[in-house]
Length: 269
Length: 370
Image 1: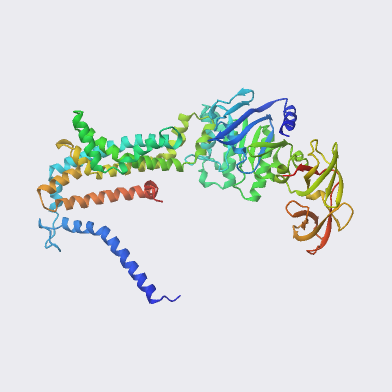
Image 2: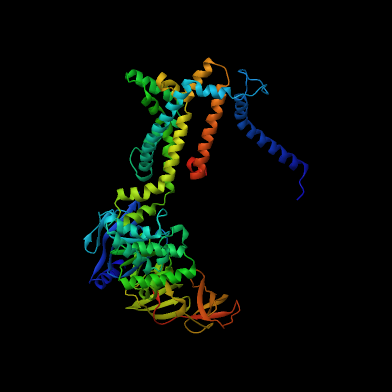
C-alpha cells in the first residue's frame, strides 16, 4: 500500500520523537562516563586529554571504601529482614481473611506514597526522643520500611500465580501444612523470593534521601559518602564512581533477568 | 422428590458404607454453594456428581476432601467422623482437572510423595512407585519431569500418585476435560478398569452427561446447590423425576399439554385438539391443568399428518448423522417450538412437509408447568 506524505511525516516524526526520548534517558550516563575519563578536574567538552586518575582516586578515598562496606552490609541485612517479613505478610494477605486486613495493607504500602525523607526524618526524631543510639540498625530499620512494600508485592504476586491445587494435592497425599510449606510452597516460590530479595537489596543500596537523616560518621552509606564528597571537592571522581555503580547494578540486573525474568519480578508483564 | 429417592439409595448401600454425608452444607459470604445434603456411598461404588457449573458439585467434592469445612452436618469416611479432620489425615486420593503434578519433582518423586509423608521405608517406596507406574503403564517415564509428558501421560501420573497411597476414597475433579476426544474415551475405559479391579470407592465430578452415563454405578444430578435426583444411569435416563434432569441428561422433547385427569399412573391429556391416554412411570403427578409432557426422541415415531393421536408438526431441518438422521420439526406444542426425532438415514423429508409425531403409550412423564 502506498503511503501518503502525511503518513511518511508522521512515521518519521514518531521515530525521531522516540529516539529523542531514549536519547534523553541514556544521555546523562554518557555525559558522566565521558567526564569520568577527563584528565582535567574541570569538565571540558570534548575532553582535551584522557585519564583514569579519577578511578584511582575513587578507590583510594577512604570514605568510599567504608561507605561501600556499610551499604553492602545494610543492603544484605535489610533485604534479608524485608524478605522474611515481607514473605510472611504476603502469605497472610494472600491466604487469610481478617478484620483489619485493608487497614494493615494500607499501612504496609504507605512507604510507597510517603516521601523517603519523611521516613528518614521520622525515624531520626523517634530515635532522638527515645534517646536510642543511632547505629547501623537505625539505617537498616529505615531501609526495611522503604523496601518492604516492594517485597510484599513481589511475593504476593508469586503466591497468587501459584496454582493452589499443588498444595491441595500435597495435603491430600498426607502432608501436614508445615510439610506442604517446606516441600511444595517454598520450592515453587523460591525464584520469586530470591528475585524479590535481590530487588530489595538494589533498592536499599541505591537509597539516599532517607539515609541522609539517620547515618552518622560510622554508618555513612556509599550514596551519602558521594554526596559529602561532592560538597567538598568538585572533581570527576564521582563520575568515575557513578559509572562503576551503574555498570555493577546493570550486570546484576542482567543476571537477575537471565535467571528469573525481570518482568515477572517487577510485575510489569 | 428428594425425600423419596434418598431412603432407596440408603437401603441399597446398607452393607458397607465408604462415605456418609449427613446434612452437610456450605455457604460462601451469604451465597449458598451447597444446601444440606444426605448421601451414602457404598464401598467400591463409582458415584458421579453431574451438573452444570455452579451447581455445587465441586463444593461437595472439596468438602469430602477436606479443603472446605462444612457449615453444618457431619461427614463419615469408613465410619470415622471426619467433619473436622484436616485433609492430610483423611486418606483420600484426588486427581484434579489440571492434574497439579509437582513441577519441581520427577514422575517417580511425584508418585512417591504420598508415601514419604507416611514414612514408608525406602525399599517399599521404590517397589510401590514401580507398581503404581506399571498400573498406569508409565514404568519408562519415572525420571521425566511432568512438563515433558503429554496431557494423557500427566493424567496417568496424577492417577498413580493418588492410587499409590491406597486411598479410602478416590476423588476425580473433571479429570478428562483437558484431554482430546479420542484420548478421553480410552482413559475413561482404563480408569474404570483400574477402579473396579481395585474395588476403589470413587467420587467423580463432571458436567458431561455422556461421561456420567457411561462410567457410573450411580449418578447424582445436581443443580442449584442440591441433588435433584440420584440413581443408576438407566434410572436417570429412563425415569427422570424433573424437567431439569430430563433435559440435562440426554435429549428430550417437551410438549405443552393440559392434564385432564389422572388415576394412578394413567393420565388423560390434551394437546390442542389431540387427546392422549398415556401411562407414566411417575408416582407423583401434578394436579390437572397446564403441564409439560416429556418424551425421549427415540420413543417418538414419525407418522402421517392427521393420524389419530399424533401431534401435528412440520419438517424444519434434516441433519444427516451417518447412521441416522436427526429430523427437527416445527411443532406448535413443543416447549421450544421445535421437536427432534431420529429417523433412518435413508429418510428424505423436504422442509415444509406436514407430518405427525406419534407418542408412546408407555413411558412418558408429566412435569408441572414451569
